[in-house]
Length: 181
Image (cartoon, rainbow, N blue to C red; front, side, top):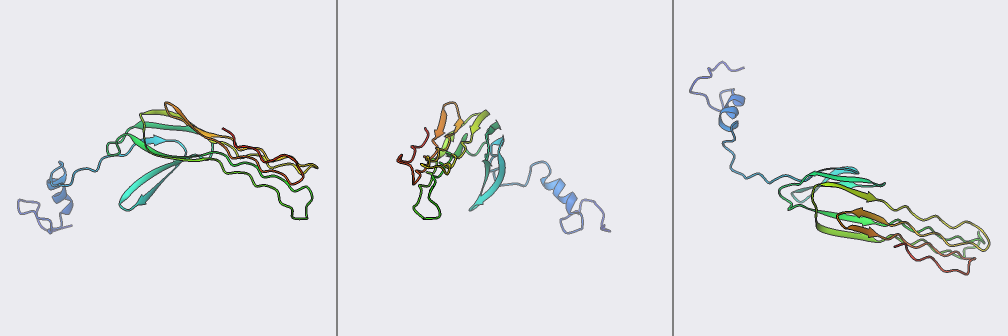
């Protein structure tokens, strides 16, 4: 505590910094930099922040189906979001004659769809996460693996990323499966 009075001679070095800041900056005075704005207020998924350069971003990562709910649009991003949507991967084939390494086909990757600056409004958006395909059963002749399921997000018009195709099996005469759509 300072032994100096709180009188008119108050300055920032007299031990009363809190009072100094209240008088000079408490009513919005003193600041010269404009506010950078605010981001969207949203819920859903696993939320994490990350920084690129001096910019801070917030990610909503969905590992299972759910709701992405934007309750308030931000002021500095123009009412847009970037999104990445990935379809479920296909299941692998089987090699019925193991341990001889003859090779079975691996399942295909789900389609990766990246869209920057997608316009949004407030409201809930349903996110569907496609599951991976089942691997082939070890039968003779072995069937192929099954396709992965599509992933989607229901903006006003729904966007879908198909799942990957299932892999062929060595002992089967059938080829791998086409991806889901």
